[in-house]
Image 1 (cartoon, rainbow, N blue to C red):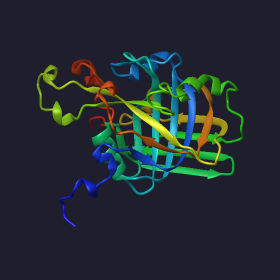
Image 2 (cartoon, rainbow, N blue to C red; image 1 turned 120 degrees about the vertical axis):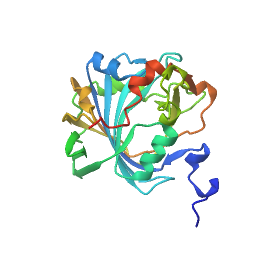
Image 3 (tube, rainbow, N blue to C red; image 1 turned 180 degrees about the vertical axis):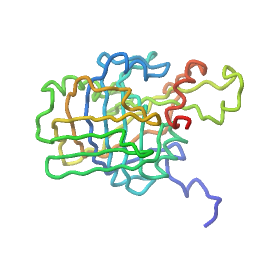
Image 4 (cartoon, helix red, strand yellow; image 1 turned 45 degrees about the vertical axis):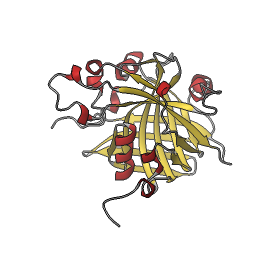
Length: 280
């Protein structure tokens, strides 16, 4: 084996293919933050959803097409594309416990992934998980999977976000919004207006339906402030509920021109550092 490799010797994601997670257990706690907080975290090209919904997630991937099984903490904010008007989820923060999943997500997908220490435990109906970096447990989730969400109108509140917005063009797919703007393209420039335009792109996410049905329950999200991981800037105002799902997921890597939308580099610059730590 050599440092040199062919495309056949690397994962499909590096060939514009599907990033596949056939085995997954995903905990999602849905809550509403303040409208101001939701609007503040969204980069240019995205507008706030009609309700300031945040999804506090923990993903346990038991099988992928690119990495050993790994765990991931993820934060999603409901948003609407300013051009297409389609609702989806934007990801301001992710923490993983492996290197290759983090590197692949950052370099190919533009996700703000960082490495950290993750803990996930479930005993019966009781679930708890946490994320820790730089000695700070900045993000924790607790849930009781008892079939009773915090808010009985949970599914009504999130129904549109979970409904495929383009059933003809992308049947069964929901949307994750992300940005591509590698620092190598602009960090050396004294005049950022001369940098290539950041790309807001639409990621189409589908599921591998399994035999196990989702489980609803009550959820709780707990933040502790960290300058490096300021997840607490999306404070909990009203918790809607928790959902544990067992379906695998797949992210389509074959971007088409209609899935890409250019934004102004100077306007985007303050949002370009979500995947980096604060200066010490």
